[in-house]
Every structure is written in structure tokens, then in C-alpha cells.
Image 1: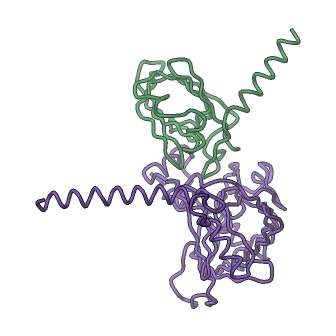
Image 2: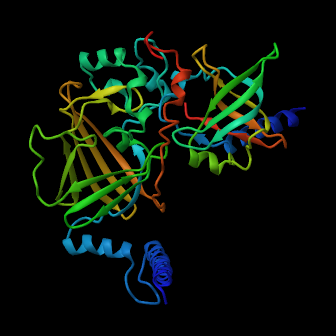
Length: 130
Length: 284
């Protein structure tokens, strides 16, 4: 049991080490609740790998069945390309699962994405420089 | 051969010529010593020789800040907030060491992210960019020195420092975002003096809305301490925003990194603003 616990710790540390530390051009903490995490599942409507931030638009089906458009942001091109966040990995129409810090503005459907799982089960990550 | 044939042939020859020039240029640029086939020194070495020929310190190369006298942490950044008390990190400077005037603090409380140039792809201000660990390529020539800052989050920014003995452009001239820089060698040091800045909403700390006025004055002093180390002393003042000048000593290390052009997407630069609660009610 102890060995299993240690393995989990090492796995978590390895994941953290693999996730790139991403740059931002403003204080991320001013825009997002970095101490909270939300998870969403939606289809990719747009993925732009640009500076100063990547842009990922997801169509998400809400609990009442209505469609919502979420706009997710993240790190910069160089950091993300190196970590596998490529247009080949994230394609239009893909059903993906994302996790990240929710927007401070309650009227915005926004998130600073930390983790994305592709339909093939590939996990892409990034750490926010906070 | 008719005229369209001649035009096609000329275009083809020009394309081949340009390809060859580019290929040779890239090869020479990437090489440090003399080319083994021609025996000629590479472009890089010739620039270094220029510094030797002029009898000035050789600072040419790509450098990155690796140590700061006053490093910042999330706790330091968060300790200086605006009227909404939202966390503001990362930051570039410990605000408690800047000795800000009431005017600067009032601006900090009033200012809104939305009006900042960064949301229109304006590059990181000086002195903010100088303490960040972005690679900077320094190129020395007889009459000027260029500093090419690869700001990974925005456009690459180039500053040119006049080394021909000129004085600052006269007071009242059109101010410049990166100011008017003149430089000189003092013994083993390169000293760059910059004035004539525009007013800048985040001209002292690009990340935390600490502004700078027309009176901002920045002095950079670079000393080569070892083949791969520079001592960099940064001093800046702004009597409108700071009660006294700020000085910090930094260490820069030479890196094997080729500066490339990074691009800020204007259409996407302000996309994040929606995620922050609007500070003013009339904000759309």
C-alpha cells in the first residue's frame, strides 16, 4: 500500500514536470480563479495556436440540453507546440474533455485550460505561471 | 526566345540565386569559427572582430537574465494590488522597492486592464522587459548597437542604440515608446542611456499597471565578467511616479539560442478581457 502511495506521488510529480510552464502577457490570477477547477466536455469549434494566448472554442451541451459556446485560453505558441498542443492533435469536431481555472467574470463562459484529453485518450497539459 | 520566356528564365535564375544566397547565409550565420572550405571568418566572428578592432568590450551574443538582486515571487506580487484587491502576479518588480508616489498609486487604483497597450500587441515596456528572462541578442557595430528582445508572448522587439556620439534628441521632440537611446563605452562597460519616452499606462511594470511618465529615464550598464557572463546594472527614475531612483544588479548568461520572430495576433490579443469582471460599468 505504501509503495502504491509512493508511486502515485512520483506519477504526480512526473506529470507536473512534463507539463510546460506557460507564459502570459497579463496576470492570469486577475482573470481566473486559479484555486478552482472546472471540467467540461465539448466539441472543438475553433483552435488557434497564436500569441499572446491560444484560443480554443468548445460547443458544450448544458444540463438542460441547450448548446453553450465556451472560449478557452492558455499559453503561448512556442511553449504549447513543444508540449504537443498542435493543430494535428486538436481538430475541428473532436469531442474533448478539458479541465482548468474558471473565469472570474460570472457572465463569461471562459477558462484557462490546464489539461485536455483528446478523443484518442491523449492527455495534453500546461502549467500556469502564477 | 520571346519576352515571356525571357521573363520566366530571369525569374527562375533569380529564385535559384536567392536560394543559394539564403543557404550560404544561413550556413555562415550558424558557424562560429572560420569556414573550413573558404578559410573566411563567419559573420558572427567578424562582428566579434569589430569589437576587437574598435578596442571595446565584446558583448555580441545572445544573453538571458539568470540572476536578480531583487527577485520577485507570487507573494511579493500579490502584496501590491489595485482597489479591487485582485491578485496581480506575475510582476516584474517588488513594488515596495519602487517608492511610488501618490500619483502612481492613484493610477494603479484607477487604471483598467482594458486600456493597456498589451491588448493591442504593444510589446513589453522598458525597464520591464530588461529584467525578464527573455533571450536578447546584442549586436555591436561601429555606430550603433541593437538589442533584439525575443518576447515570447508578443512580437520580437528591436531597440537601436546610437553609438556615434550624438546627444539625446531635443526636448519636445516626438516621444517614442522605447525612448531615445544613446550609448558609450566607459572602460570595460557599455552604458546605454534612454530618455524621451511616451507616457505609458504600464511603463514601469508591464504586468501590474505601474505607469511611467514623459520623465522616465533608464540607464543600463553592461560589464563582461567572463566569456559567458555579463553584469547588468539597471537604474531608472521617474520623478512623477517614484520618489527615488531604483537600482538593481543582474547577471546575464550567454545562451546558444537563435532569435526568431514571434508574432502577436492582434485579433486575439484582447480575447481574455471578457474573463475579468469589468471595472467600469460602461465597459462593453
